[in-house]
Length: 414
Image 1 (tube, one colour):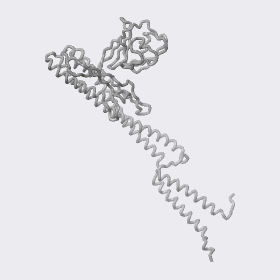
Image 2: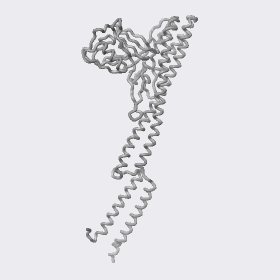
Image 3: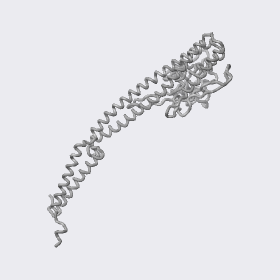
Image 4: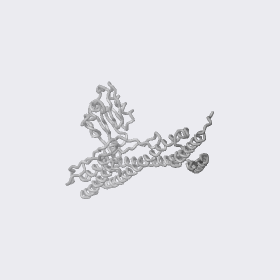
C-alpha cells in the first residue's frame, strides 16, 4: 500500500527519470563499444559462449601465426639446402671426371682448386643465418655457428686448406603447436642434413663380463635409456634396439665389444646422463667431454659427413689418386647427395603442411569471428531506434514534470 502525500508525484517522477537515464546510459555505452553485452547479467548464456569463442579465436590466430612463421623458416632452409644440392652435383661431376685416369697432374690440381672452392661454399651454406639472426642448421643452439672449420696443411697445396669441419650445434628439436594439440617438429639438426653415410662404431673393449653397478641413464641419439643395476651388455643392446632411436646395437662376436650402427645417414650422439655405463664400455670418454666428439680412443669409427667426402675428393685430386676417387669417394658422395635430397623432400612436405594449416586456421578464424559477432555484437539499427525512443520519453517526462510544478519564484513577487 502506498502512502498518499504531497511528495508522491515528485518521488515517482524522480524515480522514473533515474530509470530512463540508466536505460539511456546503457544503450549509449552499447553504441560506443558496439557490444551488446556490457556485463554478465545482460545475457549470462551468451556471455559464457562469447568468452569461449574469444579464447578460441586467440588460440587460432596464434596457430596461424606459428604456421606462417615456420613456413618462412622452412623456405629459407630449403633454399640453402637446394643450393647445397647443386654444389654437390657439381662436385660429383668433377669426381666422375677425375676418376677416369686420363688427366694430367696439373689438370687434377685445377679440379682440386674448384672442389676446394665448392667446399667453402658448402660450409657457408651450412653456417647460414636466417633473417632473425639465428643459425639455421645448429639445432636448438641457434646463437652459435653450426659448423666450426679447421685449417691445416694438405699434401699438394702450398697454402692451408680446410682440413676438418666439426658440428657445433645440438640434436634437440623444437615442437611448435599449429593446431589444437597438433605439433610440427622443427628439425634444424645440421649433422643429419649434411651427413653422407651411416655412422658405425666398433667398440674395442671386451664387454662380456660388464655389468651395471648402479642405476644409470644414457642418451643414445636423443633417446634417454634407463639401465638397471645388474644389466649386462646384452640387456643394454636390447634396450637400445627397443628405444626408438635410429641406431642398431650388437655385440661383436670376435671382440665382444659393443657395436653401434645408425639406420640412416647421421652422426651418433652418445652421452652418459647419469652414471658411467658408456664410459666403462670404452664407447665414450669421461663426462667432461661433450658429444658428438667424445668417442673413446679404442673405438673404430666409419661414416662421415658431406664435408669429409668433399675433403677426401679434394685431397685425392691433389695427390692424383684417381682409384680412391672412383671407389670410396664417389660412393660417399652419392650417399651424401641421396641424404640431402631426402632432407629437401622432407622440408618441402613440411612446408606444404604448414601452408595447409595456415589456410585452415584462417578459415576457422573467420567462422569463430562470425560466432562472436552473433553472440556479442550490437544491432546498430535497433539500438539507434531504441536510443531515440528513450530520448523522446525522457523529454516527455521532463515536459510533464515541468507542467506539474509550474510555480516559480515570480509567482510570489507582487
